[in-house]
Image 1 (spheres, helix red, strand yellow):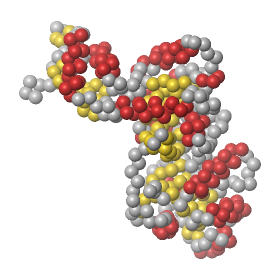
Image 2 (tube, rainbow, N blue to C red):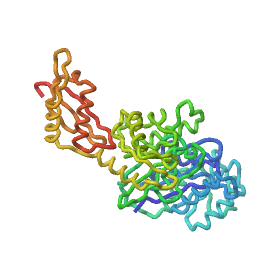
Image 3 (cartoon, rainbow, N blue to C red):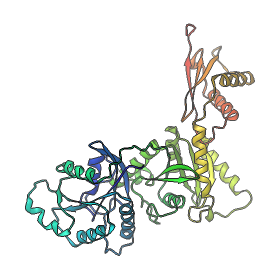
Image 4 (cartoon, rainbow, N blue to C red):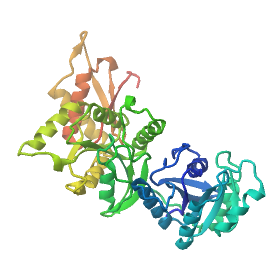
Length: 438
């Protein structure tokens, strides 16, 4: 069974994200002093007194707001409430009880879920500061200071008591897919299309998704975790602290993903920033597919895809192993191919070639094209083995490492790719000198 889900809800700016960060021990949720910062649900695993659970941070609830973005945030929080096993209602002792707190409490009572009432920002505790919060009818209020960690342990003790004692850990064997790219490239739209419901906020405003969001789902018998990330802008465009941390989190999502889906706006073509993001994926050794989105906006003829593929090959020479797919996240055109191609790229990154096959292949490659001489010396490859996978790393033992020219290394990589399907994944070739005594 899955880990119990604990949702943190409440009106904006009451300290939910600060509490979330304190409990999970990492700055996963963005914390700032103005409301609306946490726009989507954010998940992280946590543990208290031996009980593991998943903590969910949500956007602030403004139930009576007519603003479109606030309605989106409300919808996300409602989904968190529906899926939660335990709910923590956050309030603010400094601003006191208000009508928004009462609206949220009324909604939570209808949920039928166990709800714990946290009164935050009580650095200087006094019992009289709790009296008004009894009016919410949510039982005993728990005084805490999320920022200073005061009372957090007592609150978590109650959380553990409310959680059904599920002791069996669930091994996360899902394929983790990070959807990355520039702002407004269609990442959230693609995630929603793949998931089949509005998991993240979809808006025409660039930069709507500020956090990296994880959602697990099953497709064709395979479990996936899809990570929708904030758009990655150029550094000079990142003039807002919040967005800076969003970019860091998006890059972090690439590092922890099994495979990356690089979204490019086909109507704009490949930009310098697209190339930089692809470069980061390549440097991290992640298998990937390149998704050309908004394909429905492109005027086409019989040679259009070939032209785009040629342009991609020119711009992404350093990762010519990429798998391209042309889709429209808006209409759903070809989006059904993305998961299959992502899974293929990951499988290729896990491919292992036996030492015997490797040495036979490299020997044939050397016979077909010998290494060039350098100062009268010629490179000799004596032994080859695969040391790692994801990505595949091949170690070549040679007489003198300095004789391995870049062009010949590239030639050997091409030989490996022709012999085995490594599409969608980088390959690492490491050259080591082998002494006569080895």
